[in-house]
Amino acid sequence: MMRLKRDFSLHWKNYLILFLVVELSLEVAVIPLFNAWTSLLLNLGAIPYLSYTNALSLVTSHPYITLGLLLELIILIICVFGQFALILNGVVLIRQDEFSFRAILKNTARQLRQLDPLGIFFFAGYFLLIVPFSGIFFSSPLLSKVVIPEFILDFLLQKPLYATLISIFYLAIFILSIRLLFVLPLMLFEKVKIKTALAQSWQLTKNKFWSYTLKLLKISLIALITNLGLTGILYSIQLGLDQTSPLSALIGGSINVTLLQIGSFLISVWASVALLQLILPTNVPLATYKSTKKSWLSKIAKPLFALFTLGTLLGNGAYLVHLGQTPLIISHRGVDAKNGVQNTIPALRKTAQAKPNYIEIDIQETKDHKFVVMHDENLKQLADLDTSPQELTLAQLTALTVHENGHQAKIPSFDEYLSVAKQYKQKLLVEIKTTKRDSKNMLKNFFDTYKTTLKQNNHELQSLDYKVITNAKKYAPTLNAYYILPYNFIFPQTPANGYTMEKTTLNDSFVTQAKLSFKKVYSWTVNSEEDLKKAAFLDVDGIITDNVTEARWVYHNFNANTSYANRLLDAVILLPE
Image 1 (tube, one colour):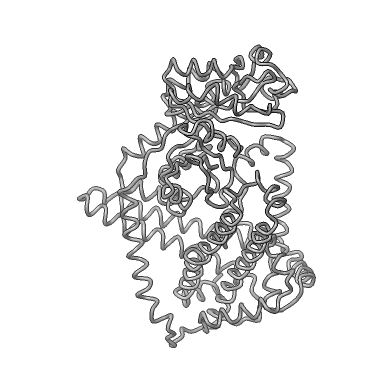
Image 2 (image 1 turned 45 degrees about the vertical axis):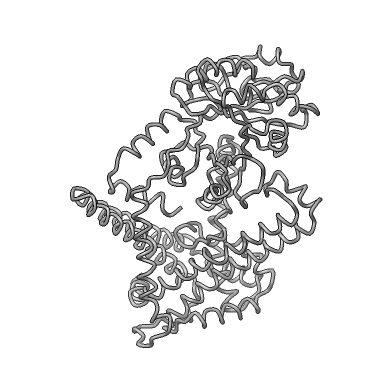
């Protein structure tokens, strides 16, 4: 660790430049190119959106577009590999005091040409194994969407068997990540094949699993404690500045948030360098002196960094005074903090008193072509009856009692729910759930029956099924209809009025594109204080939440408390996103 400390103190500026240039190059050039490529392919195929729901039809109906997307995926994997190789080569050259981007690019290009093609594809999975704490040590904006949506994890973790299997899986991943720690450096610098690299890494880490685990833990703890210490110091300073004039507090706040960002980035660079030096070949020597050579990069580094810092300062000033809009608060499945059974009348009556802007409900078609308020495709969980709503008549369904969170209630018809909502002047966001068992004219019958009522009471629609959106625009063009996206692959081009996006992959780029396209964005399911603040900062139009009362409390305090010190703490959560 002393060796690392000496090396980092000598070369921290070069390390900072290396990581900053690579990161900015990806964000400003590479990622926009990939987005443009995807959009071009979808436009050529007249494909309005990309999701798992249309994956099969994409393959069967658009083979050439599919091949183009697969080629894009291959190049993406190569770029991720290239990012890691660039940084690793940069660290090696900095250690040898021979840092130049020309040399880094030359070495990386040579290594890619010499690499076994299978090695690049192996890296796609290997990246998920090499760093258990990838957010601290190494992350790539190219893989920012490679995450499991939170609603899927929540569903799986509620099942004891799945929760156990997931725990075993992550434990196995952690063990493999330690045992395969040296695979990529061996492939890059020793020019060995995958099989040999795997065997050698396994041998190098033999009987050293806990040693390397403790080293990684130590690096993580140092980074965490340093970050907390920096945040605490700047927060204390800002508390004092908040007692001065508004202008001084704002200027001081902008500087402190900028220092926090730069400091946090430098800490993450140190942690990444610490990991990379841990896995580098031992025959790479360390430089023990400061170079007196001045490269062109060194000459422009200071003005470039000054320009970057000035832009960051101005951006942080805007952040401190602009809190984002308070989004519409939408009750998820008609409940507020488990105050009743989802999608039932008693829960509606209680939740309406909390005055959400909308109450979101789910409806399905019944055996006799009526509509019932129900989310699940099977009644087993709520009614202890192993059947679907489509196999029972409306009369049979409304006679059933459902149980949840210590409450019980009858299953309501859609007509009954609409009637009670009208009594409370409560607007609804109606999700139409479709199944293979629905009648042929289900959507036409729905709109013929309900479009006037929905429009008169300012209700809105949403659905995971794209056919619902196209039919809504056909039969009820003035009714607001939102297409539900569980994953943010690429911004869609659809006739929907907006998009209901699962919060895990929702980002500011998607929201910005939506605003430029005059589309609204609802985020689901937003429950924690942290997620509620993120949603406001992203300027989404609405949040779908299980906790209406808490959401109102969070947004009230968020807007009422103008302390820049508190904004600085929020920046730890909000600005990195």
